[in-house]
Image (cartoon, rainbow, N blue to C red; front, side, top):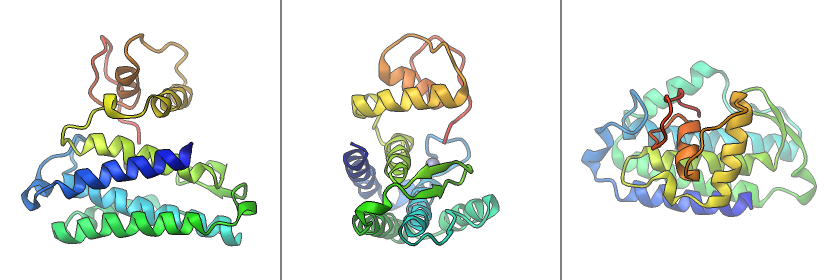
Length: 200
Ligand code: ZN
């Protein structure tokens, strides 16, 4: 299921990127302090970083996503200064390279342990889910009209379960699934509840 989510979410995200005009990149995204250029740079850099985890799973050689949190932030800041055509190309080429690497992962390596940027040890199969979250949620953050209600129901269900658990919330406000997911992700939502801080 995660592979389908990753493919579909990547298509949605890249399609939204392709519809941005050059002037749209400097406009604010849905994330505080980030332009759309920051967001596209982050999603492209995320694909590159996840390729490190695929390499780790394939070879057993420890290759973290990022050298440090500082490197991650610096790469986003530098990437945001790239020309729109470069960002568009980077978004596409990094996503294609990640898909290619995953396609080449031997059946036996999918359960190999890798460590995420947050320090969690997970099987390589989790890379699909990690990428799915990035492309779907940041497609909304691009602020081109895509909303949580446009995301697949089964994806939103897993997302709600995961974030509620990660935030340690036993009680989640009632409401439409898309709004509950947006609320938990710290994005604009239609629930009668105080906003949470951004997640991801
Ligand atoms: Zn992200």
